[in-house]
Image 1: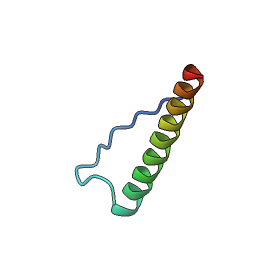
Image 2: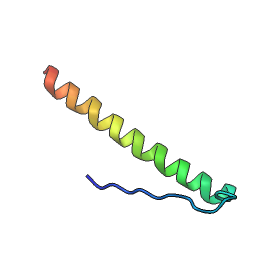
Image 3: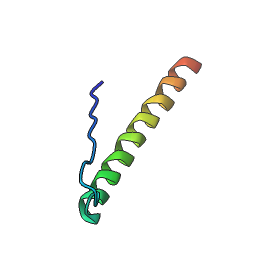
Image 4: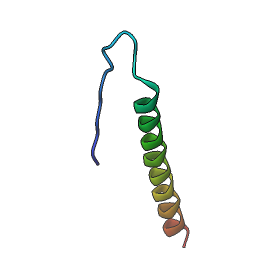
Length: 46
């Protein structure tokens, strides 16, 4: 499993557009993880 950590060092943070892209990608990754967990549970139950 790949991992990526990044610390935002700018005192003003991240501009809205790049921040939105980060949130969108994070949600996508979370959904894929949840889907994989559900599929794993289905296999264990059958």
